[in-house]
Image (cartoon, rainbow, N blue to C red; front, top):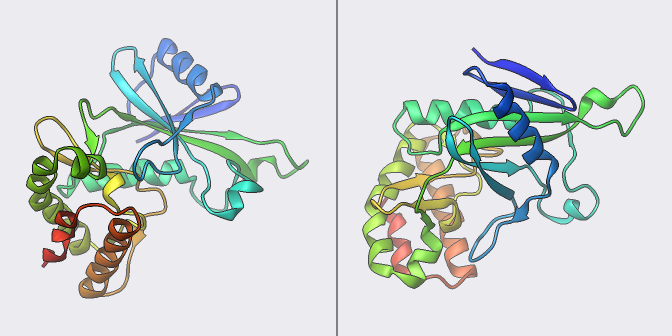
Length: 233
């Protein structure tokens, strides 16, 4: 059961009770500009971090658009069904339940944008807050700096992707920049915005994962050891 906390101008959803201090912290964080992803395959998402009272380090992701549309409309989305942040929040909970290592979702939030009179509730900005995976780095960066660790992570990554395929989940942007490896060499998959259930058979979904992954490795000239993903059964 999700409770929606209203702290003007934000609507903050959480499965657990939030304190006034936590809500104020989150609202202050939403109001600040966040930084774009950096480094190899850093991604288009704008993120910031905060030590949230009673919870600890969290990552705040500000939903932003990619592609040519970002030059026209970078942050505003049209609400036709479920908010993007809300959809990712519930998907992360579901994925954790089926054995996929993902960041633990803490809250999602949205803010209505009064750009067009009478249609403000259809336009919004969005955020999702997850627990920080401490001492983690992207698989993309590890593959160039500590290739032995990257190679060791491939077996667990393949297992994680197999779980997604078994459950018909299509992560539309799975590449080495959206895989984190912590200091215990645990593998986490991130950035499930726009992920969806794929009605195609498992074999075709497997091929989509492999093609997207190989394209990213080739484009960014990453080590061929990352191509071990082809071993997905």
